[in-house]
Length: 419
Ligand code: IPM
Ligand code: MG
Picture: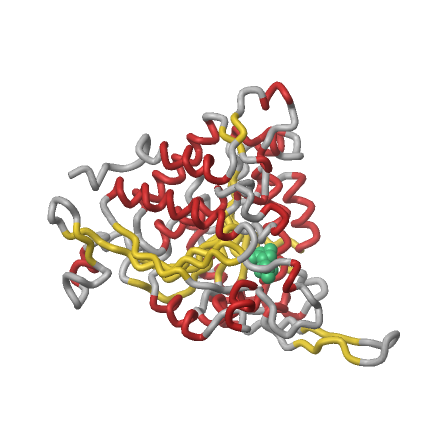
């Protein structure tokens, strides 16, 4: 599990705990915790949105892992559980209520499972579960979606790609998240059958391109200083704007090597030579598609975490929304079958980016790697080769989380909660 690189404007100097302990309100406020030794240690205020389908299964698993990390490193988490997505449509008639969006804004970070399911899929419906995602992304200013893709060596047999192609794969997809086709004006289909028409528009402004490009350059600086900008500049006006702006910003980063790829060629290169990429930056829809494609490298869509961040800072880092990239998988919901690793690794990103807890983030990532090394596999990761499978243990969501929790203590930083 490779870290996604340095945090731009890193909070490394903010000793976690100091600002929480100094926060107005004092004892009794949720930013303080009572510990047996009487010490004041930080309590982070987080929102959990389990959502629909397998969302509740994987969020419960990630919460247990976070609790284990908190116990080990000496902090506490105060959770506010919110209903969003299809569950909120059933309960309230909207995908997310304004007061719940406000609670998200007031938290330090949000951990989300998944939203959506067949019962809310009617193309004629005006209320859709995905509106919760767009309300959070747009409403909270989360313009950048970070999707790291690496290959754990033990999962190479789970990928359909030839093993030699997977050596050295370690890429970070930076997807623009609040512009383009997702947020552009659209008209739903109108007209008589046989002559119906609909449209979506793909707008981008220079500031929208510039801020995500700067973030991607900053991230590339914390890694191997290579950035690939993905567009369709041979066809789209917005892609030509994208390319122009990215190249202008490149002048601020003479130490980062920039190259351009057309999205179709990039899609091919992701499966032909995935190790050739480091950081990729691209617009909203291209990033959506390329990140699902890239997940195949990691062995399963269930492995991949994501972080959505913007410019807003909280006491310990950047405000953010963390979620696995897989969907709600309603066919396996509530059956203890979902792979919780994408959500658990999202929780690790939350620790690193929003809480400034690189110590706990490293320990969670190391524990995931150790559980995989020790052969624990959910159904989606089960090796095709019977000889490889023989050395593995098939587990459900709960037992996978148990295996990871049991390994939180074995590697990582110094123990903080031992007193
Ligand atoms: C993702 C998902 C969402 C998206 C869907 C659920 C709307 O595919 O986060 O990648 O397209 O952004
Ligand atoms: Mg997607």
